[in-house]
Length: 525
Image (cartoon, rainbow, N blue to C red):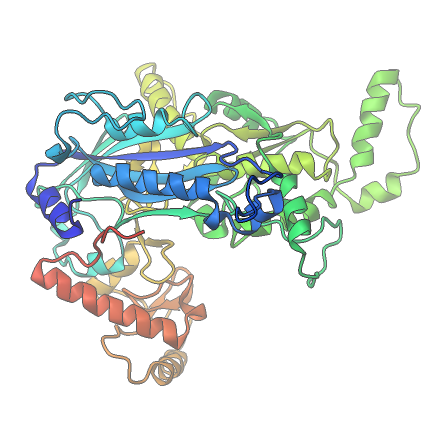
């Protein structure tokens, strides 16, 4: 087998014209519960055991090994999650594919014979016997990047601002022209993880209309039962394509919910969308429970009954309750980045009985990425016809790779970089201002406040090497350390984390000076 170092060297020496990024997911049972065992030594794999120890299940372990072996042949990096309920993830690979495997790349999974137009990675994934086929959701894009500012450190290490790129986009292909003429990977390594869920809703407590702050730790049987309340293999909401989604957005009676986390929503979302202000997707069930309790659903039933009777004779004394609660929506529409979180969220909404059974529950097919891809094509046609933009999405869409955020046509962001600490989106201007020496330390805060904060910072971090100065962002009115934290995560960063961040930053700077890669895919699982 080819070693990791030799694989990395061959990738650098070989001419790579582009990198292809493939996002994929499918809810499909990948394991079958077994109640009868043929031997006394064979482990019993009933539903509870599968949920408790999926990382030990032989079928999932075999699939993990197969994915590693095949994807490494094509120098693929990224993250795939496999679980009893399906597969989810995003991967990136060079194109054309490596020639080390020869012209015949038939690996037993319907890949077929290689030619110049073939994409063996996408073919392998799309035709896989366990999760491929019509139900597999994929979003493919091409990234031709010749210099990347993937996080704070890479930006700090590049002091030549004139080398920053001008983007040229055609459909879902992006080219960034800079002084460096070799494209780079969107991920650092390949990780294929076995998890209980492919997207962590993590239902670990009973359903309650009035959730308390402290609930008993559930048993494994309870956890399994709760998780069945969010199973898209049983039921899920109704798909809306981007055009149907825009039509639904025009209806003021449709409740539009963004199922992403708050740091994602902060840089872009749809018009009139509700922000649940969740930090993790596992907090979303509790949000839905609170949301359901805000509406007077009996009012909706009365209106429907009046429509059936043709008069208003069914008015009841529930007006007092209606004053305290809001009039209910006629439908709920959810969305997320690529479609998987909102698909699971709609499944939970339908199976939890939090909402009336006859309430329509929709979700955006393919998520924001599908919408941005579609709206770019629509706007090209509208511009030709002299019409204005019809997009209802404003801002940019955060993604979990080096592109950081995407705009219409899936064009990588020129505005955001990845925070070294929390890995969330960080406005590039925060580093530009530091380089320009134009950071505003006042902005309503006196010099004494600045010195007090700086002394607290110095006391907390005394003895840690290679620390940039504490910096104040006048826009957010928060502090941060350029290259280590951002205004969003700085206050919650501990001394231990600062030590780790500073060490990593120093290592990356040394590697940059020596022309080495700080991260390498070492070939281990």
